[in-house]
Amino acid sequence: MATKKKTPASKKAKAKSATRAPARKKTAAKKAKPGVRPPPRKKTAAARKKAPKAAPPPPLPKPAENAKARELARRIGDLLLDKKATDVVILDMRGMTSYADYIVIASGESDRQVSAMAENVQVQLKQGAQPLRPISTEGLETGQWVLLDYDDVVAHLFNGEVRAFYDLDGLWADAPRVKLS
Image (cartoon, rainbow, N blue to C red):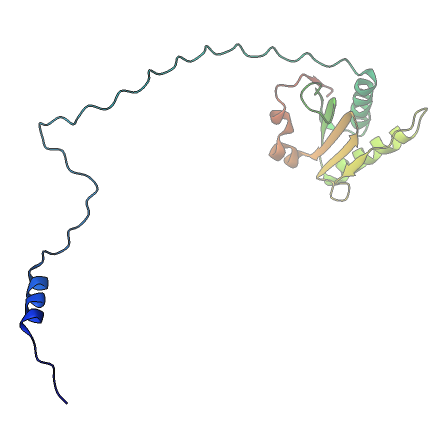
């Protein structure tokens, strides 16, 4: 087999490629020399003056008194006291929540007592001239936190430790309250 002979032209091409400068690294920007100021920035439009802040909106007026809800909250509180509930508090939630006008919070010494308090409230409100049934009940099985929802009035019955943990009193600290015990 015959090998190809090198011609002077191919030698020149190789010589040119060998003398080329190596590739340069790309740099982000040129560094400023010490003592030399950078060129001034272009002037932009003057900053707009901000409008003065408006006064905060006036507080919302309290909704009209719901006498039936207030009486129901008071009755639930009294029924809880009949079963030796402790720290019974009625919170006036009108204008603060959309789901209830009043919240009744009470504590019991044990899970069994909390369940008995809830059952007493349910039984007593079913009896009478206008029987009431809760829309929803939660927690009767365990007795640690029982919730009775009577539409405008919601009752939270706690075991003492659970009440301290969830601290609904602190959550609604700004609500007007009536302490029954």
